[in-house]
Length: 163
Image 1 (cartoon, rainbow, N blue to C red):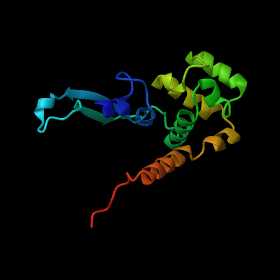
Image 2: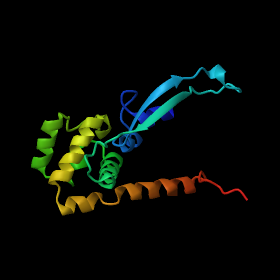
Image 3: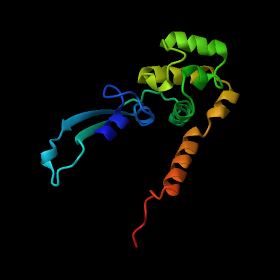
């Protein structure tokens, strides 16, 4: 159930990096809560069935999904507050305008934003950012994946090939 929440975000829990990466393309919901006694041996975790449906039209309005992945990875992973997260990619005036438009507290954790607010930040970035800002976030998603792979390898949790 906890893993499902991480992939689904709102309305089940706060948005997570994983939920934000999926939501532009997929709708997801929990469609069944299993009873632990449905399984043997009885698991120590709650089990749910999740259904993901690909959206007919994605929420990015034909804009770059890769740029969205990079922006989310850059903002979500590297910073705590909205003000700190966006200071390198938006001018102070752009920050104020976005803050007012999406009704966000400067000092609250960026993880407290709703999906619709993230979309508005992305649309503002896509519309108003300059090449310097775009170069700052470029490949952030790939870098995040690389860091995760290195952590898995360091801790011996990588997938092993069977011989």
